[in-house]
Image (tube, rainbow, N blue to C red):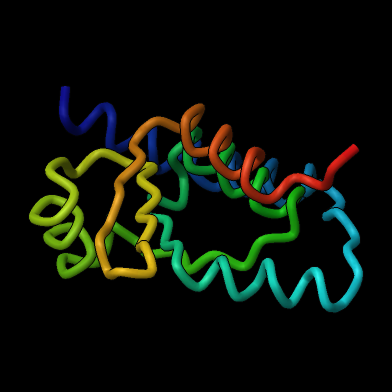
Length: 127
């Protein structure tokens, strides 16, 4: 059974990455000063993810739509990132957004819907 899922991931992974690339959303346009402020705020964020995880793809698409430059940390191929996610966040599930506060404390969001909601609330343009 384990090999079946590995084979399935091997076949579907490149297709999912191609679909992500072809359906890349247009990012929002902000004034240069506003974008600089957003970029500064994004330095406090890190997304632990797998490249072919559908929920991670969903979050990455939202990052692009909101024009956010968040550090992506590969928790699939990097043992160091996976161990940090487990030790500090408490679980090795992805996607996981690490939010570092000004005082150095970290908050960990594990569900793609919660991550997207947080990003939209914090970075969406006012209508």
